[in-house]
Length: 277
Image (cartoon, rainbow, N blue to C red):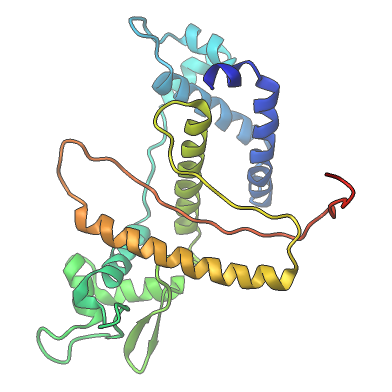
C-alpha cells in the first residue's frame, strides 16, 4: 500500500486538497492568511521529517531534511533551532472534563437508572452529596464556585433553585474559544492519524468506518441525526466507563487513545443524475 501511494503523488495531492478545503475555510474565517500558513507548513514539515523519518545509522542533518522536505536549508536550520510548540491543555478543559467524567461514570454520582444526579450546590450537612463535594473529590486547589462559573459559561450545567444539573453528557465548550480549539485539534488530528496510518499500511489497521448517502430528504436527515446522536452518545458513555475502570496513572506500557463519532450533513449542491449508473 505504501509503494502504491508513493507512486501516485497527484492522487495524494488531490485527496489532500479535499481535506484542506474545510481547513482553508477555518483559517480564512479567523484571519489567517498565506504567509502565516506557509511558515507553519514549513515548520511542521521539518518537525515531522525529524521525528518520523530518521535514517538508521545516519545523522539527521539540515541538508538531508532540506532535500527530503523541499524546505530551504537556511529555513530548516532556523526552524530546528526554534523548536516545536508543546501542546497546552487549557485548565478549563482539564478540570471540567474530569468533573463531568466522574459525574457521568462513578456510581456515587449516578441515580439508580445510571443518570448523573442533580446536586445541591453545597452540602447542607457533612458528607452529603453536592456539587461542592464532587469538585473536592477531584481537586481541593480550586473553589467549587469557580468551577461552577466555568461550567455555566460553557453551557455544560444549569442551576435551578440552588441545584446543579448536568445538561450535556460530555464536556463540550460552547463559548470558550481556547477550549473549543483544543478539542478541534485533538479530535481531527486523531482521526486523520488513524485514517492515514490505515492507507499507508503502517501497522495493524485502526477501526475507521462510515456510512454516507447522497440523496436523503431533509426531514429524514433530521430524524437520522437525532437517532445517530443518541446511539453514538450511549456508545461513547459505555466506552468511557470501561476505559475509566481500567486506566492507570503509572505503568510501563501506557498508551493514549481517542474514540470519536461524528455526524455531518449539508444540502446537496448538485442533484444526482438518475441516468448515471
